[in-house]
Image: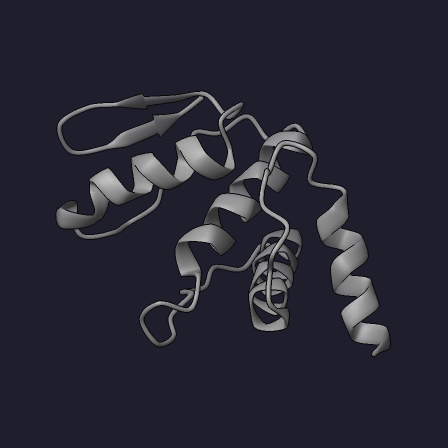
Length: 108
């Protein structure tokens, strides 16, 4: 339970992210991404389809932006998912600047 409270407390500070229905596994994934970033490691967020990887990555990028990271941020995903990424950013992080080209989204 203490770990859950730590995850919730770390999530609450992301004020530019407008989604509050995280499940505990999504919070754990977000915390894992933040921990990797803090210690200078890379990782791949991968699990079953439909478990919220897009939302976790958007929340992570929002946390970086809120912490003052200059960007840009690279998300590697199939071209067929580009429209979904744009839609999800507009839905969950409308205040995060973005520019869409034919094959990429550039976050300011």
